Length: 250
Image (cartoon, rainbow, N blue to C red; front, side, top):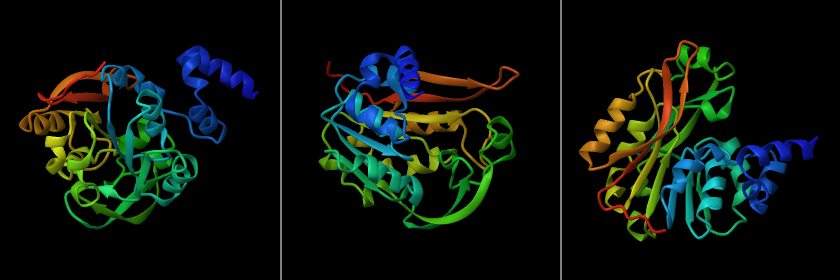
């Protein structure tokens, strides 16, 4: 059965990806790299540093390591369970760094709404539409986690450029970006999942995120992985933003 799964993956995303030793080892241990982001990451050329906010178990960190083998990857994940999975999988590997915290405007303890599917957990209440569109993502319980601005957890001035900031924070995108603003001069690319519908109570939508980043000189340079509901309405997508100082090294 395992060989059958591997063959299907190889056909879908390419032999070189699935045979990468780290990705293969992680897959055996139950964590699959987020290969849906390959097309976006291929546009960036060389990346020196990846800041991975909302890391969960390390799915994005894995595909970032595959694409940018010489990069340093700084991940942030507030939930203890996924963070522990990340540690067991990736911390022994060179240049993976994990901080168990959420990124936001203030340094404080905050409640987190834990989903039955932990990668759908959010600092915002999980909305009815989220549970309807994505069954199995309803709230399971709440917990308390640390939130802090990125500048208090990572010295962005020391990061190797070009630098990619990735956010997957389930409706908390604008708040998390506000917690990263001091680092913007040291960031070349921002890759963030945005929603067109309110899936989490009080969340900022894609237009709000685009407007905020526009004020800070980041422009949309690509849209990937669009998802739709049964009526054909756009639900969410991954947006790639570039700064005017961004440089692509091939």
